[in-house]
Figure 1 (cartoon, rainbow, N blue to C red):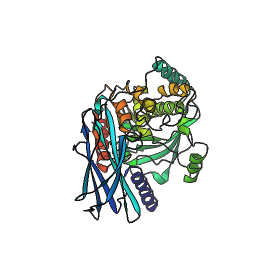
Figure 2: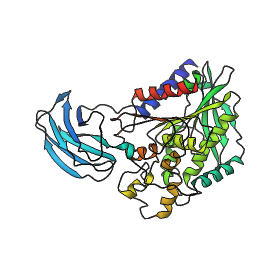
Figure 3: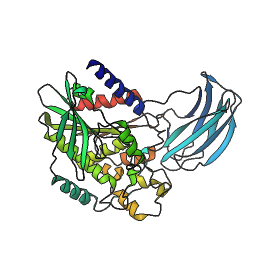
Length: 426
């Protein structure tokens, strides 16, 4: 039993490290740095980028570096080559007259191998506004969807998972009925008698198994980690691999031309149904629920808090699905970048997206929120995330870690966990 638990802990740790850790360091490092320490300028200012190339932590000299500068995830404004002098080169960008982000990519060839990196300068990001618009019947649409969900009994089925239980925590595989099909997840609850607050963990994109948040449960918090695809979350990895490559490939845009049948409708309602389940637990204290996640999970955190007034706190890393129509207005849009190259002349898909865009849900947030991302995010561009964040009027705090891409430092995770614990265990 002890060995199985050790193996499980190792697997969970490895999974977490893969999901959130920094990428492995390479032999040759390309270092690109804006000339302001916080990487942030006022719109209309001119940014400069310093480029260095290091091998064994020693700057390389007199080598050619290719660089390009342009708005994030858009066509470059300029592409040139510069020669490093005394191990460094400084390049100037043209003035950036709008609120947004400008990215400098640099690459170099050393011993036949290409190395690259980039840095991103922000320009008055607090002034970025969404390009998406709020449908006049947005609230009516979602109120009707929740009313439809409320007619369906939760019907929870809990199956104890002895191999994952600890001395302090019971772990269950759970199924509950959703608007269509089911929602599955992993419940971790303290064994000791009492009433506890709760955290709903909502998932990032993809198709995978889940293992639950035992650590928080051992610290006196009920945790419920859900999958969104209506399939059990304790199956063999090969099942998820097959689904990801087959039936669930491209789920992000399935039925995008129909707001009533778009894939994410049952997902968003499934998050509300997960709150229904938490509320039904005898060990829940009845008053304190947080929701948290990253990327797609960051989006679902904001969406769940907007849809369900039983949520008291939200913590979101780099929220996806934010300002999806950005590309239709000549700037970066949110993951899954559905309008970058496709659907550009499909107004019915554009209209459907407005009912599912995080920037529109963000307008209805009423609870305290903790948010964090990096300027270098190459999956969820910061322009899209600021579009949603800037319309939130509820208490909020944003923790920027400029150089992070679509990953987090351990310090970010620690800050988030401490914020949740402080609020839920007060």
